[in-house]
Image (cartoon, rainbow, N blue to C red):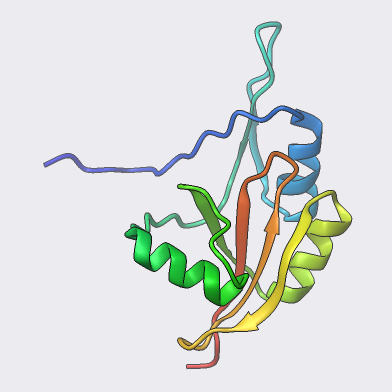
Length: 131
């Protein structure tokens, strides 16, 4: 059995500066390393604890319907736990994201808001409800 020690997602973006403004500056992901060189630009950002959530198509459609009203996300969508989903969505839109849907209260008690990053990546911002 392989022991996974880190879950890292690599995004290749068309507008590197816009992505940095959104993920590092507006969302607040701390910069861990800058490995940029003449060959290209790269920043490593700390996104906290990572989990891999697997959906079948029916569940993806259910979540999209709940959050947005229709099936809109691609095969990959980021879900980011934040202290205030509505405020985080507003901050990201001010930094260049596009509002996809306003915050909604989910049947499982979370508050979810949806935006799209400048490169089109769908981001669900969620705040867990009181348990």
